[in-house]
Amino acid sequence: MYNHKYIKSLLKLAQEIDDSNFDNKFPELIDLLKKIDTCKEIKGINLATLTSLISVVNSDIFIPACWKTFNSYFRDYFNIKIFWGGNTDYDKYSDILKTVRKVAKKSLE
Image (tube, rainbow, N blue to C red; front, side):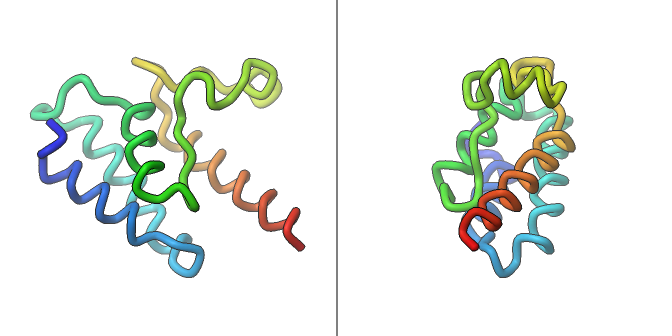
């Protein structure tokens, strides 16, 4: 499954994303995540696994969406379900990552 062309494309795209092209390429990455999720050839892989993989290839931009990445207080406050198994919400992950990036940029100013 990790040799599938969509997974390879995902990892390549994740590696290419940086601050200068994030706004243009990140929506493409989210679309690719959704495509992988619905691909019948790829089984047993979800948002938590995929975001862990893209975080390995580009830890400056991405954070994994594993169940302990966001503690229960954070999840409860922002009404986020655990990104695990069937609880896969790519749009919510996208929103969280964009928000975390904004906060990080503000803290560096």
